[in-house]
Amino acid sequence: MVELGVLRVLTLDDPEEVARHGRLVERHYPHVSTLSRCIPDHPDGIPNAAAEVDALPYIEALGREMATEVDALCISCALDPGVEALGEALDIPVVGAGASVAAVASARGERVGTLGLENGAESAIRDLLGDRLAAEAVVEGAATTNYLTTDEGRAAIRAAVDRLVDAGCDVVAPSCTGISSSGAIPDARADAPIPIVDPVVAMGAVATTAVAPPRPPRQ
Image (cartoon, rainbow, N blue to C red; front, side, top):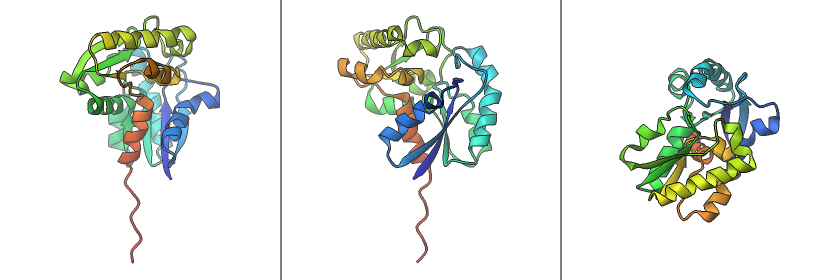
């Protein structure tokens, strides 16, 4: 069994909500167990660049704490905050949702469309996709990740996917893990003629492959 730490950058009081991304990974990868925790003092997550700067010390402190209990650490945010610093400091793999969704989307298509928050912080996904980035869309009305879990937010996600399809994209790479939390991806997939990559599931896939397999016992 692989133990993944899932670090949430959205402050949540309900333990079930904290564990939502971890449970999503477990449903797709039965050989994975997850430990989920969230940073304090960020009820809106990281909706902009200023919030990202403020959140980094919390992310790095919590990441160091969780690293003693898991085989790999997942930063469940498409901005990949703290991934580089923690990757250098820790002895376990540190994986971000942003790099993960970009990698999986690049494997699925040639014309990738991204989908994020209004006025969201610029994601590294754009640089990672390079020439494969065909179009960018925002979920209209989504100033913070909390909007994505409302009925209006889920409808806006589906409308944004339609715009990316119309723009000629052949795969969608959401640039906010709140879109995973919304539960809208399965419905959007049913209606869309192109694949939609779930950033949290992509993160789980990359993290599990990054964990070194156990050494076989000596004969």
